Image 1 (tube, rainbow, N blue to C red):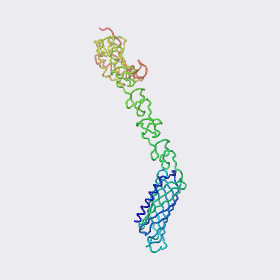
Image 2: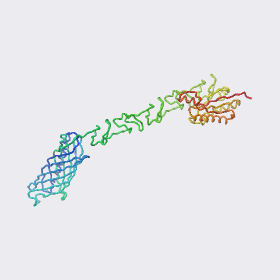
Image 3: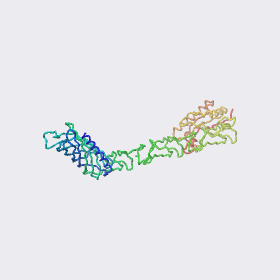
Image 4: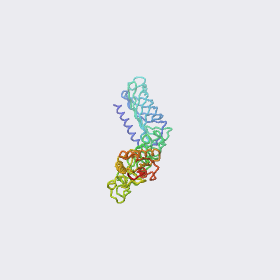
Length: 466
């Protein structure tokens, strides 16, 4: 029971000393040599027949990396035997300490080591009825706390249990004293990230960067610019950023470069989530730039996206199958005067005359679109009715290469084959692809390209009928 009471007193001493030491402060430093002494109270195992005794301890330690230290300790005590005589007890030990910083000024530690305890009295060697005699090896373990008083002086308290290897006798002690740190140096924070160099795993962190408890920078949006320096900390994944961590947007369409799949969108054009222009009416002029966003499909438009009506008959160019109807003439839904074959412009074929047929091939394609059927059917009907007319189908493109000339020839051939299939004599229809040699409009915008990319009907001869 005496041992348990003494252990309780030691635990209370350690806890109370730690609480009292917390307000003390000292500069954060790196330690090398620790030396100190203190007063100790030891409670002896009942088997020793010794009462608790007051004594002292002296220590010398060396601090190692990873918050470890080793120290040797000498302790002494002069307890009384329960039967009267005084005893002399000496302990010598070596231990390894694991030190844990508490705040910037204090530290707690755990202690484990080996030692020996010697018991002596003027009755030894002899009867051990009054108390133990001789020396016993022991295993020891305990815990303690240091609190900074100055930069190099620490108040130190400790609780320790020593168990004899031979007979299992366990003594419990508590001590309070002072440690002097010899050769200590201030701990630095070279990159000023709030984590001391001794604990900093990333010692070259740029100034102003937010770091974790290890001193390593974080990058929450994974854009390569550290948090704390990143002025745009929520950058979308994949976006290219500048030195400040903000997304770049070369075409100013609000879709960051790196995410933008159409990086050269014209200024002002409406785009989708990929950064590509939208064209709701499919007229070749992007939404946002298109001033006539509801243009009927197939109508030809100008560079502003608005359709024209060259002959003023209220049937839009591109949809008008008789695009040069005389002013004021009544027309049907196709823009042709009643009874006039569609595509003849309401007049007889005149040698040397030319007209653009409203046929829009798909890009890089020579396949006749379905919408060309009614136009070519009307033209075939007119040609069959006037067998003295010979024509050329002239196809024009908007490119500059030999491939463009080849493509326009294929388109002209496609129109010729269709007319022949509708009953027009093959000797009356020639086909020729001119490439981009005969442009109608300069520039590279959508409107100019649409005007240059065309199919023309050229009347070669119109001899009187038989």
